[in-house]
Image (cartoon, rainbow, N blue to C red; front, side, top):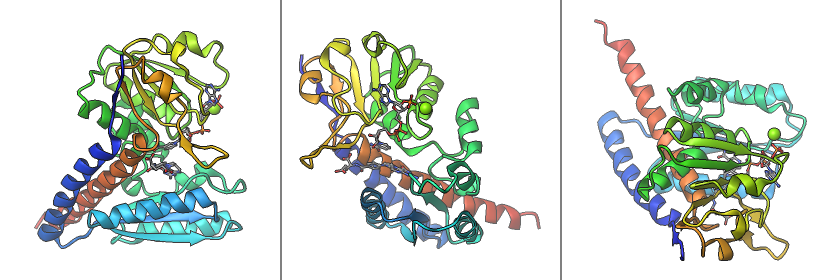
Length: 293
Ligand SMILES: NC(=O)C1=CN([C@@H]2O[C@H](COP(=O)(O)OP(=O)(O)OC[C@H]3O[C@@H](n4cnc5c(N)ncnc54)[C@H](OP(=O)(O)O)[C@@H]3O)[C@@H](O)[C@H]2O)C=CC1
Ligand SMILES: Nc1nc(=O)c2c([nH]1)NC[C@@H]1CN(c3ccc(C(=O)N[C@@H](CCC(=O)O)C(=O)O)cc3)C=[N+]21
Ligand SMILES: [Mg+2]
């Protein structure tokens, strides 16, 4: 067998074309242009590149984006006051604080400061709780992108055995919750899991987000499984690879995502989607308060 390679770039391009149309219609109808504020603390090269990519993606679909750069030495009160200003700015619909933050800044306190209505990453505790109880305000972008890829490829989720490798708050845990909400039977593995292969081999859908090149080799994958590789690793020679040994696993899987060109482009697409949803809700809310008389 040779797997179908899931074209994340193509799926993202189609979704972004639809978003461009929706944003243009929204702007024409309301006079409001959706706007994302990205807050970047420090000068990490990879983070700067991601943030630049997000800003370009916003412009490409007709959204405004503002990047606020703060020095790595920035204090918690300074960062919180920047978030407060974006929370209060009615022209801003989405706020994203790029992670990771410098070690001296407490990530939970920072994320919990973002207005729930502008939390387009879906990282605020309230939005995480929404995921648990199945009534989300904003779904986190990477898991949302994974779900959209599965749907676009018409891969059934209900009743499937899903194994998620990685248990972070930004990828592994929310992916497991979202697919459980779609009635999958979900198992989460992490660095302390004993005999990882015993779990991965049972997966109909294997989602890998560990940040370890070549963690998943062909003998760990069930024949015909759907393999979603979220990992992004830069090798010493400069190449970008996922967590899955693509060349061997593609001979065993039914579907596989490449890295780059798989989940990554979908993550940014779902960020754009969430920002439009936030802008729509803010206009509805403004009209709602005017409605009574
Ligand atoms: N494509 C995209 O859009 C995105 C890609 N990424 C990429 O996805 C990867 C994961 O990101 P993120 O979740 O933020 O990373 P974290 O480092 O926060 O989490 C990694 C998770 O993987 C687990 N893990 C690490 N090593 C192993 C192992 N040998 N076996 C099993 N589990 C292991 C860790 O376990 P433990 O909890 O026990 O430490 C942890 O739960 C990275 O490569 C990142 O660059 C991230 C975000 C978006
Ligand atoms: N608050 C916050 N929200 C995030 O969503 C967030 C974050 N912080 N910190 C870092 C991670 C990582 N992340 C990626 C997004 C897109 C690609 C992406 O577009 N990747 C392309 C290009 C890869 C490349 O060439 O480097 C691809 O996979 O094809 C990758 C990674 C979002 N993250
Ligand atoms: Mg952990």
